[in-house]
Figure (cartoon, rainbow, N blue to C red):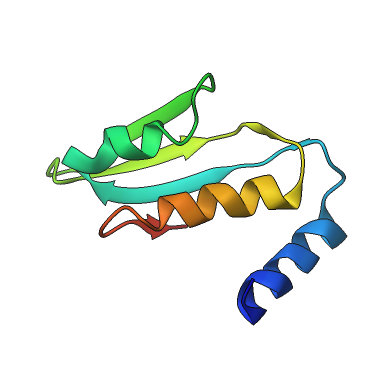
Length: 86
C-alpha cells in the first residue's frame, strides 16, 4: 500500500465501526455505468443520468466488513477509465 492508501485506511478505521454501511458515489460516462454497478453485486445501486445524458451518477450503500473491503472497491473502480469518485 502506498502512503495515501495507508492514511485513508487509518481514517476509515478511526471513523467507522465495522461492519458498517458505507456510501460510495461515482460519476462516469453513461456507457461505463454497468462497469461501476458490477462493483456492487447483490447490492442496490441507484443511477441518475446527467441533464444531457452523457454522464451518470451512481450511488451504492453496501454493508462493508472492513476498511480493506472499501479500499478494494475503490481500487477496482479506479481501473474504470474516466471515473470520478465523490
